[in-house]
Image (cartoon, rainbow, N blue to C red; front, top):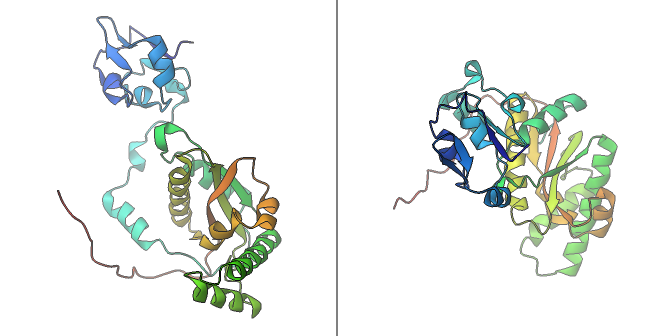
Length: 274
C-alpha cells in the first residue's frame, strides 16, 4: 500500500492526523487528508504512528500501522498522577535478592513494555541482551572486577580511585559488589554511530525498571558494567554484541529479599523559570 491511505467514507476531515504528524507531512485537502508530497512523505516520515493513533474514526492507515494493528487505549486502565507518583517515588534500587529466578515470560513482558519508550525521530535503536543464567551473571561480575583492576593499574590518578579500590577489596573478601546477588542481568545496547542510541537505551531501561517495580520485582542500575563493558576486551568478547554496538546501560533484576515501607526524602526541587 502507499505510505498513507485514507478511507474517504470514514474520514470526518477533522484534521487531527495533520496536527499530530510531528514531521508536518499531512495536509487537509478538499477530499481528505493527504501527504504533502509522496517523495517528501517517504523521506521525512518517522513511522511513529501518531496519525493513525489520533484519528477518532479509524479512517487513516499507515503502511506500517493500521488501526487494527494498534493497541486500544483502555479507559479502565488509566491511572492518575497520585498512582504514577507513588510508583516513581517508591521505586528503590534493589541490592538484596531472593535466590530464585524470574520466569523468562515475565522478563519478556517487561521488555515488551520497555520497547514503547520514546527515541529520537522514532529511530528505535535499542537492542537487548538478557543474561538469564545466574552463573553467567557471576562470571560477568568477575570480569567487571578484572576490568576495574586494569583501570586502577593503567590510571594511577583516577578520580574515583578510592571508591574503586574499596569495591575491589570487597570483592576479594567475598562480597558481590557488582551484581549484588541478582539472578539476572539485562543489558541495553545499540549502534555506536547512532546519536539517539544512548538516550533511547537509558529511557527504555527506565521504563523497564518502573515496569519491574510495578510487577513486584526489583532492579538496580549496574554502572560498573557500563564502566567496563566497552573497554575491557574479555568482557566485551564475552557479551558478543553485534559489530558496531556498545553497551549503553545495564540493570540487575530479581525478586527483592524484602519490601520497603516508606519513601525517603530527597533534596528540595531545584528549578529555574524563564
